[in-house]
Structure formats: C-alpha cells, structure tokens
Image (cartoon, rainbow, N blue to C red; front, side, top):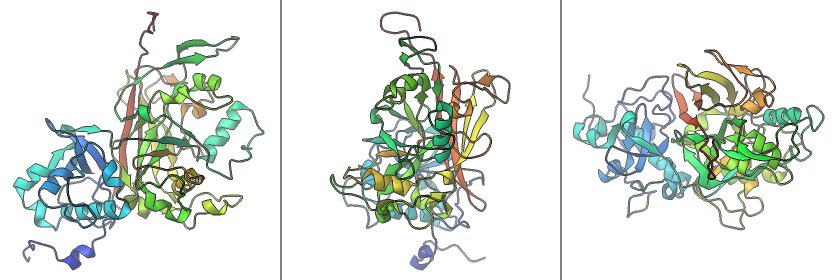
Length: 449
C-alpha cells in the first residue's frame, strides 16, 4: 500500500463535499451518533479551567475552533483578518458574516477531520490542544438572543387546540391561518441552554367554579416539542427578505422547548394573547445544526391551499425530514418514557416562509435571533407535541412505561427533546434539549409553596 501523502491536493479536497455519505473521520464515531462528520454543528463550550469559546461537535468530542485558528489551520478568505471570532463567548459575530463564511468554515473543518487527511490525524501534540472529550467540557448558550418569535406552523397542532377549546367547528381553523404563518413575540431574556432547571412558576389562575383568579403555583406545567431557526445575517430596518433569499439569512436550527403554564395561559390569553404564561423559561439545545448539514434531507411539505401570496410562494421542496421525540423521566423512574414522536416534514409553513413573513413589514432580524416553529405535532397516535394535546387539557391521562400516568408535568420530572435526520449509515442529529422540573419557591410574603 502506498504511503499517505502529507497534504491532500487541492483537486482532492475540492471533490470532497462535506455532506458526502461516504466520508469518514479519523475519530471513531458510532453510526447512531448525532454528530458524524456529515453534521459538524457549532456551539460554545468551556474546557476545564478555560473560558468559553467556539467549538464543533464530532462524535463524543469537541473540536476547539479557537485552538485550531491559533494553530493557523482556519485561515480562509471568507473570514476577516484580525481578532479571533472563535475566542468569543457567543457565535453572533461569526454567524453574522453570512452563509458563505460559515459554509467555508464547516468545509475546512470537514477536510481536517477526514480519515485520509494527516494534518490532525498524525500530529498527536496538536490533537491534544484542539480536541476535548464532550464529558469534560461545559456547554453554554451558543448565541446572544436579541429577539425570540414563536410561530404556529403545525396544522395538526392548531386543529387539536381548536378542537380541545371547542370554539369552532371540528377541523376548522381561523380564517387567516392558511394565508400567513401566525406568531407572537416572546421573551428573549429568559431563553436558557439545555440542562438549566425549570422552577415551577406562579401565576394568576381562574380555577373551576371560582369567580375571581388567585395567584398560585401552576398546576398545568407543559412542554412543547419545537425547533427554531437561528438567524445568521440580518436585514436592515425597513427592508424585507424575499422568499428566494431567505436561506441566505438562516444559519442553523436548534431544538426548543417553550415551557408553558396552561392554566395561566387560559386566563390571560384574551384579548392580547399569551404573556407571562410562556415568558418564564424557554430552553434550547446547545449545538446549532447548520442548514448546510440539513440540505440532503429536504422534502416536500403538505400542500398549501389556497396558494400562498407571492411573497410567501416558495418554490421546490421546503421542509426537512427530521424525526423528533419528547420524553418524560419521573424522579423515581430509571427509564424515560417517550410520549411524542413527530417530524418536521409535517409542518404546514416552512422555515423560509417564517423569515419572509417576519420581515414582510420591514422588521429587522439580527444574528442570533430565534424563530421557533411552535409545537410540532403530526397525524397518528402519540404524535401530539405537548401534554395539552396529548391529554386534551388534562381530561385523559397518558401512561408512562414504568408505571404511573401524567396529565401535566410534576416536580422531579425531567423532559428531554431530541431529533435527527437519518442518512445512509449516519445521522445528522441535534443531541438533546433537557430540563428538570423543580418545586416553586416560597413567595416573598412568606407563604408556603
């Protein structure tokens, strides 16, 4: 067998697309891993004793982009000269450069990780500087979130909610639902990274049989199985993003859990919609899966009838075939119970349509903004993306695998969201987005919780 060359030729590198299903890394990555060489999601981590910096996940390892840049291995024309973009505690400045720059970095990282590239593979001293085991690092919020908007893109979720409330004829949505992707602006300051505990909140609740509300702990704490766009390059105030240009403004996708207090929500929602019932906590997964990595999994979405207005008329496959799950693990259980299985391809409205509509009146999006899908439900059994749907607002309990039932979340429950796109022999996954429900504190006037 001939010796491996010290450097790959430019022609060899050019032929190696980062999404090629035959690519292999010199690092061992199991086929069921969410982070194969075909994924390479970006995040922010800190090694033991170190400061937060940018990294890429590969298998159960984190590749340190700051160390890679210091070693002179990330010198590409799309990155500006000067101060490092990867020594910073968030990814905002990097993703603000746009898709051309972020794609170039992902491509370069893919080249360095390939099994037939000796630059990292054969340099033990360099590998010791740039690689960290996932278990040895702390993961942080990957971006500073300046704006958070939560949409309602799932037709199935919307129909289920209408049916539960009983405010319209069965199967009938609001008149405007099929003309525009509905949304509300949420609270960006309370978006937290996966693993942050979720303290049971208090709120105004109008209990059954009562004529006035009381301020009390929520009894209907719920999860929502969602995904969210992480905006890359923004747009100027007063400008719009055309549907054909929307992809250029989208960096990647995270899992998102918009924790909800359904009893507080029911009382406050009229006439202006949700407010404190959803602003207490929103969790996101720490690794941002790029749209470049998701491109092989594009698929057709549901037929849109009537046809969208011109500014929302997206040509070609608009959705992504991404399997999604939500599970609950009570404190006295050894195994989590999967309570929902859904898929992003079921969404009626697309990611690109979110961006086009959000900017349609001249709203300016900024790097790091989150545009969430809303609850992702699908048709079929166990495909309801929240307990409000699955239990019909507490009217019918769901059974957990190791015994017991749930109407809504109880203290000590740990909720985990996960998702992946299945390729041939590999997965492009999102890891997990988790949150542990902790008891409400005593209130400030000393009353017991």
